[in-house]
Length: 174
Image 1: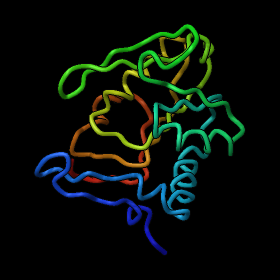
Image 2: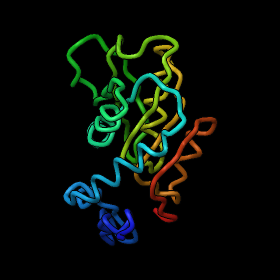
Image 3: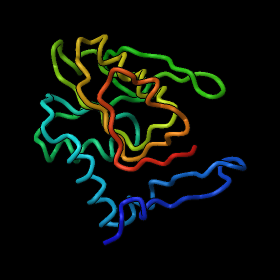
């Protein structure tokens, strides 16, 4: 049987020389790869008590919604600034060159709710840390964070110390 990481296309020297780009679209384009990725993410939530799944735009939607559906939990999207129609709160975070802002609806998480974050990739951890701050500002408690892939060489887990973080596939480099 094919390993899940075998579904991930690795593209050397993209976006720059020395970087290996891990392309999740090759997982999505294969029925078995997609099925196994959802199952593996979901398996990492076994035994975790939670109320809601949160996923960031856009690939967090792809992996988070099926997990929420399968486990009969609500799904809350986190989007880039200006994309949500109701009252929001926002959090800015650093990028390699500049900053970005994510938002969540002000009424999306109720105080005391236990939250799981699902996304495709952890690199530096900046986006996820911003999402955690949003959830906590609304009174939610992040009980688990699960990624399909992790680029361990970028030390994203350091940003998420104190949180229960897991990844299905871990690449040692960048």
